[in-house]
Image (tube, rainbow, N blue to C red):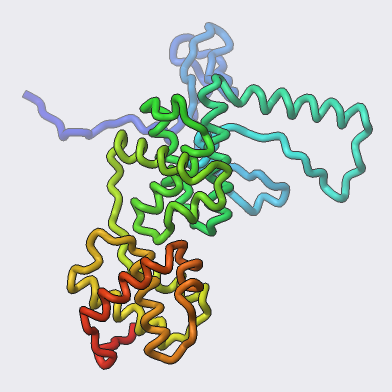
Length: 316
């Protein structure tokens, strides 16, 4: 029995047949963009040819920016960034359009904007994501926090948590939830100050998101609030380091459990200021931390009972 090696003969798509004769009738063979056909009998020798040209595309006139794909998908847009927009800017080198053409472009832009939304849910989603973008810009948050907040808002809409609640309140609650999940020192009052709704409505919406979605929130430690409060009071670096040492000692002694982290950080900063002779009132520190002066006095007494030695101060 005759045997042969495996894959001794094979078909290579890159190898083209150089013969111009038809194997059936020996007629003339012609090749166009789509297929190879015999002119005599009409036999199709090859079709659906593979385009071996470059796959990149250039969106500029100079062809320097050779991109293989379009813009990446993003969670900050209701359609993941797949839709297009009609721009409003005109290049300076071109003449201004006539009034009739400008009205036509404005009408096309309006109708194109309306066609982007397939349902009322998408329109609400777009409004909520736009509000999240405004809040993150006002708070100075990075792009990662914005994408996390947009994902929370989208999940809340899919779980029907938006029903009966304000879109602005849910957007602010999503931003606060993203800060809690990523361990950022932003309180609910900080988010509510730049929101367009009251703090009570933001708190109610956040509680609904936290309960229904089960957010993996991280406990924020008082140490995370010390730099922001110290910058607001414009204290020295030695006072800031002393305040962080006090917060770390309090955390090791487990006296920060169950207390407001921003209030405890403010008390540590107040105690550090008085140790270094920096004159600051309890009311000034309380206004920066958005707490009451009584809270500072209560946490200061707890620090006095702890008895942290100033010599144990550590630099960071």
